Each structure stands twice: as C-alpha cells, then as structure tokens.
Image (cartoon, rainbow, N blue to C red; front, side, top):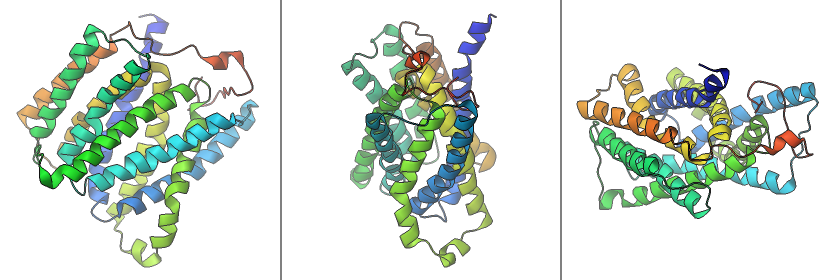
Length: 329
C-alpha cells in the first residue's frame, strides 16, 4: 500500500478512536449522571479542560514561533461555536433527556445530525447528492433505529416525550450548524488553537452556574466513581476526543465527519455490555452491521470534495501551523 493511501486512512482511524472513547463515555456518564447535576458536571468538565489547553497551546506556539492571533470575525465565530457546542448541544442534551429517554436521544439527538448536515450542505452547495449518499444515509439511519429499538429501553414517542423530543431535534440542528461552521475554520487555523478557544467559551458560559451552586458539601457527597466519571469525560472523552475529532474533521469535511456519528450507538451498546453488564440483542448486532456497511459506502464516495484547499499553505497573517501533536500538520 502506498504511503499516501496509508495516510488517507488516518482520519478514519482517528474517528474510530473518537467514537470508541465517546461510546465508553456513554457508560461513564450513566454512572456519573446518578450523582452529578448536568450543568455542574459539564461546567466543571469544560473548566478543567480549558487551562490544560492554554498551557499546551502557549508552549506549542512559542516553540514553533507561530502567532496566536485570529481575525476578529473568526474569533467571534469560534466563541459562538464554543457556546453552541457546550450549551446548545451538551447541556441541552442532558436537559432534553429529562423529558425523553436515551433511545430517543440516540435517534433524534444524534441520528438526525447527518441528515440535517446533508440538507444544509446541499443548500449551501458544499456537497452533491450521489447514489452512495442516497443509499448510505437511509441505511445508517434505519440501522440506528434498529439498534436503539432492540435495546432495553426501546424507542417510544408520545405526548410524554414530546418536549424532550423537540429539544433533541433542535440539538441535532445545532450540531449540523456546528460541524459546517467549524469545518470552515479548520481550513484556516490550527485545530489546537480552535479547540482551546472553543473549550474556553464553553467554560465561561457555564462556570457561573458552578460558582453559584457549587459548595464543599456538594462535592463531598460525590463518590469516587462520580469523580472518575468526570475525569474520564473531561480528559479522554473531551480533551482527547474533541481535539482528535476536529483534526479528522479538517481532513474529511463536515458531511463525512457527521456520518461517523452513527457509530456512537454501536460503540455505546458494546461499552455498556462490557462495563455495565447490559445485554446486546440480535437486533442491535444487525443494526451495528448495517451502520458499518452504510459508513463504508458513504466514505468510499470519492465524488465529494473532502477537504478544501488549505489556505494555511500561504502563511498569511491569520494562518497558524505549529508542528506539534494535535495541530493540523
């Protein structure tokens, strides 16, 4: 296999690692969710990540001699996307699940994201509708429904879940806009710099809640398992997961990246089997095979322009190219 062919596999392998980490995180958050308030959990999570990233980015950029400056419009955009990701996606998901269930969340809160991404990308003429997309997208969506319907909770829609289901759909819409928005910035700036500002925006948007509601008495009631859940979510699922996710996103584009989201119910089901002794039904296995087949079909669609020409090559003032792990080298 040629060196270029091997390198072209790196983003796909990266997404496999990301969704393995995030699948395990679903089990981790089930454990932590029994003790933590969702806003407190996410506020601490982002507050823990931001300082680590700033130390990393300052040391890395100082070593490479690169500038941390961004165009004002781009800086405002990444701060907006950071708030959209933390509040409009992560916190909204936790809130929506109070009025719906995890199975509905997998379909409406995540499964619809690639569908909406396609619609928006088509409207913006960023992708073309091809036979592989027309086959792979419905196959993946149906397979996810099979996975969650075959689980212990099943799939239930009705008046009791209506509020949560609407919020879950809104979460998918926010996620689609986030993917398309961040993919534009990854063509101009280092992933490390972007993820640092994104986590900072998330921390600033939720940390006031932590300061108002947090207390030593509250933290003392959290068990060791609850703290381990927070640490895993913050350091592995978020710090490593988000950085690697956006690195891969910069190379595959918004649509193909969003399609990997269909792998989450698969990895979450098997993580639950090994970590929480949850059962895996035949329907979930069949659905998992369908998801993998659909992902293969879509990722082989070479008619899509996966990555735009990288303007960082020109070394303009807004461009950043630190030769460090986590940067877009």
